[in-house]
Every structure is written in structure tokens, then in C-alpha cells.
Length: 565
Ligand code: GLU
Image (cartoon, rainbow, N blue to C red; front, side, top):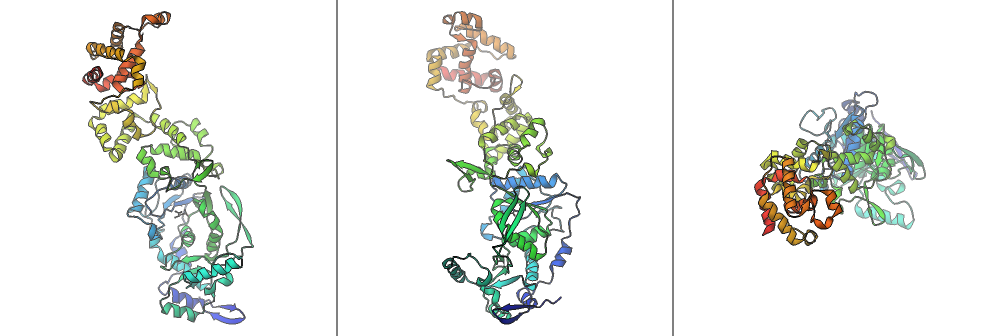
């Protein structure tokens, strides 16, 4: 097909053979958009199945907002029997870091976010839609651009920075819209000969869209969560291909989401204002646009104002932060679900033991204003989630976490796994009741150091010594140390404690104590508090008998003696 269009500029008749221009610019491109349509066939999926994607740049940094978006995208695909794929947006080499891709995948896999397709070394690398890295799709973008050039919708622009700056100054003086458009888009007027000459002279150029838009025209954009939004039409001759032939985000978005057959684009709302550009790009390429969900950033309060969680300022903006802290991934996912859908918590109450994947995410329950990240709530959820895990599950997670983040603790964890499991049992249950004290694996070592370390020394505060009386403290421990024998069971242990307590003036008889408190030093529970302080350094701790069992007779005696000296 030969398309020969006529351009009329400033009364002068100029013939531009766009076909020739296209050949001049892309001599090696032989395919057309129609060929690509055949190659990247429409997906054969059941009615209503959604195709969604996560499209990170391989910077190695995974923002919590990215995790949130991919959680939503993956759910929308999975719950409709669709496809969730990974596309690597590696067109900006400056932002790329070594292993950036692997780091991102590792972070997501920890959160159990699995891709159906993507640039993997296995059968998820679907040959129909591959490649999944933008840097390997150069030919596809160029095929599309070549066709736009052939149709007169795109052209090369040789303007240098200074020329663009001069245009901007003129526009500022005249108080006109800033940008490269309409009569200001001077490279629109270059003749084929001029272009050929510049190329011959190795002048660098970008390819721009020849926009037909008018800022006076208003468009209504429908966002699946936000509803109708009115925006001015795009009128800028935006860049499609940069000087190195690599596409801009805008153009790659149109080409990739079309040919990878995305049905719903879930992305950050920083892209919302670009929609008019994207609409025009889809239009000129002859592509049907996908539906969009723009999600507001996860924010935090700073003083009285709300701001986006920032990579630079907030450690909690990074997904790795949660891994480092040892906040179980299912707790983080659970929390993100509560942000994603307003009816999630209600569902959770009705389905306390269901996997969160059973919840059906709905777009009309999605908030359109940025959620405030609430660490306290996340911690509560984590405690709840941990309380539901079995001892073996907790052990496996603590083992994996400590291996990666706390080698010293890891030695304790693996030294005697059965014994370590007893320590888990200790903080998980009190008299058979489930406790909710632990919200992250990183706090365990500090919280229960006294359980993990043989030879551990408590530092007792002056406050506690004064409360129980320093002399009395000594007497209690001395007597107990002399009398204590390893008990056969809990009952035996407690009746021994009672006998010894009574010897030094405590009573197990509540009534008698109430009637004449002056006759006693206190109750057996006060006696036990002193023993507890010697064992743990704290007045409150999990079950004392269990602590004795974990420590063993020798260590118990050593700790008692440690105080007496
Ligand atoms: N690479 C883009 C980003 O990281 C993707 C946006 C999108 O999902 O379309 O912001």
C-alpha cells in the first residue's frame, strides 16, 4: 500500500511522501501493525477473564505502593481466571541496578505474588507474548512508529535543547501553553530532503506524535474506581521514540498493553494526567484502549498534612523493610487487603480462618483517596496472624528469617529445634489460651533473650529492688536456691514454691492475708514475682513453670545465685 499525503503549509504546496519518510527512518523494519496483530493473537480466555500486569522498572527497589498495586492486579486476574503477567520496563538504563529484576521478583515471591507469565526461564515465558522486557521489544515499537510515520501521524524532530528552550521562552512571553505543538512544532515542516540531509549529517533526532488535539476540547475519562473525570484533550507532540530509538513510557504503554492484551491497567495515579496522551496514542495506532484503575499513593501524616510515603524519607516505604523486621508476609498482605477493599475486615470477621485469596476483590469497594499507612494497625494484624500460626509454622518462619537477618539468633534457633519450639509455645499460650504478644520475628530475640541464652545476666532496676526490698530479695532467692529441686511436674513445682514461700513469711492463703496483711510479707504470687525477676529480669513474663522447664535446673540455680552474690 502506498500512502501519499499532501501537506499544505503557509500557502505553499509541499508534497511529502510519508512512505519514503518511513523508509528513510526505519529501513530495516519490514513488518506492519497488521502483522503484529496476527503475531500477538488475542488471548483465548473465558468471558470476563482479566489480563493484568505489574510493570516495574528494574531499580531493585520495591515500594510498598508497587506491592499494593500488584496485589490488586494479581487478584483481579486470578479471581476471574485471567492472566497476571510481569513486564520489565527497562527503557531507562540510568535507573537500572545490577540484579534489579531478581530483587523485585524475590520481594514479590515472598509475598506470594506469582506471575502467570513473564521473562522467566521456564514455561511462564509464553512465546506468543514474549519478550517481556521492553529493552527486547525495540522492533515492535519501531514497527508501530514506522506505520504512524507512514500515515502522517508521527515525524522526526531534530530540535536541540536550546531550540526547545527558545520555544518555551517565546510561549512564556506570550502567555501561551508551554510545549512542542502546533505552529511551534517547527520540525513538522521539514521537507523529506531536509530530513534526509540531517540524517546524512548524523544529526540526532526523536520521533514525535503529530497531535491532532486541541486543549479547548474536553474529554471525559472513566476510571473504574474514580468514575468520570474531565480532562483537556492532548495537544502536545509528545515524544514516541527517544534519540536511542527506545520508546517513552507513554508509547511503550500503548504498544505493550495492546499487544500483550492487557484488559485492566492498575497503576499509580501519577499517570492519571497522562491519560489524554495515552488515549490519542491508542487512537492513532488503531488500538482499543484497556480499562484503567488509578490508585492513590499510600500516605502518612507529617504534622497536620498528609504526604506520600517516600523512598527517600520513610524506611517503611520499602517492601524489604517488612522482611527485615520479620513481619510475616501474610500479615502485610492481610493489611494491604484491608486498605484495598472497605468490606475486607467484615469478611475477615465472618471468615476468620479462610485464606485471604478466597476474598473476592471488588472495584466498587476500593478507596479512591490515598490510604494512610497505619503501623499500629499492621502490628495488631501481625499479632493476630502470628497467633493463628502453628508452632511448626512459626519455627519455620523464624528459622528462615533469622538465617537471613540475624545469624546470632539463628544459631540459637537451630541449636536445639525442639527446645526452641518450647520457647514458641511459651509466648504463644498461657494456660492453653492463645496470646497475641509477638508481631514481628525481629523483636523475639530482645523480648526473650533470657530464654535463649545460657549464662544470661539480668539487670534488675533499682525500682524493682526497692519495690520488693533489696534485703528481702536476697533472702527469698537465697532460701529458694537452697531448697529448690527440679520438680516432676507443674503441681509438684508449685506446691514446693508454696512451702518455701511460707518459710520466708509469704502465704498462699488469700483470706488470711486479707484479714491480717501485716502478718505476712505478701502472697505466694509476690514471692514468685521475685523469682521471676531473677529468671527474666522482668516482673511480668509468660508462665514461670514453663520458663523453668526450658532453662533447666542448673541454669535456674545459676540465675538464683547470680542475684545472691
Ligand atoms: N513502569 C511504570 C512505573 O513504574 C509502570 C506504570 C504502569 O503500571 O503503567 O511507574
